[in-house]
Length: 262
Image 1 (tube, rainbow, N blue to C red):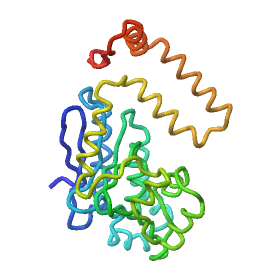
Image 2 (image 1 turned 30 degrees about the vertical axis):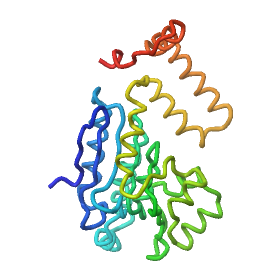
Image 3 (image 1 turned 90 degrees about the horizontal axis):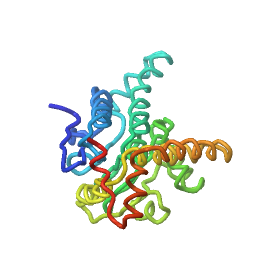
Image 4 (image 1 turned 135 degrees about the vertical axis):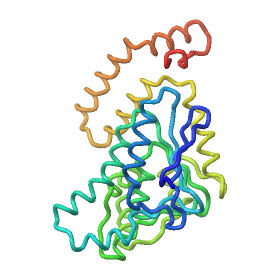
């Protein structure tokens, strides 16, 4: 049975982590399957957006503790190699030119938080939570969790989450703007699918450039971001998408970006 299942719904690829008996933890094969799914979707002209969700009543519990237990006997080089699998998944989400939405029921824990926050948009249902409880088993966060969370929450809240390891509920995350949509319980997937429809007739290349800009804005200094915006605007000005968009605006009609994807 595949760990990662996917279904094309309209122009959205619904990607489901299918390991509910272990709260969709990152067992052996998880990273290879998810990375290949994302890369195939990135090259599929029929796919405008992706949603990552979990089967059952939990999004993702992060690393499998039995797998983590075996790493105590590894050399440091071997541990680096093992962690490169998680890093590769986070990088694949980061590099994907298409918007990716995480749809969360139940909660996300450990590297599951990294997976959720690596996505461009986050939908959580009511009564769900994030838990970064590495400290409770003598570990420290990985998968760029502290980077993603630092972009959306105050340092004191991040310290509480990582140093104490308690649960931060979805309503609190929504209040600080860490997630995009707070849905009714049991409705995260449907809400994410509705949200993904926004990308059905938006310009693909423009979305890709905006994603790059959004991702780099938190790390670049003033001059670097100004130059990157300039470079991408120069490319955009000569793109068929901008020709269609500007012509449609001047002609007082809706632009048709779908025809440019064929």
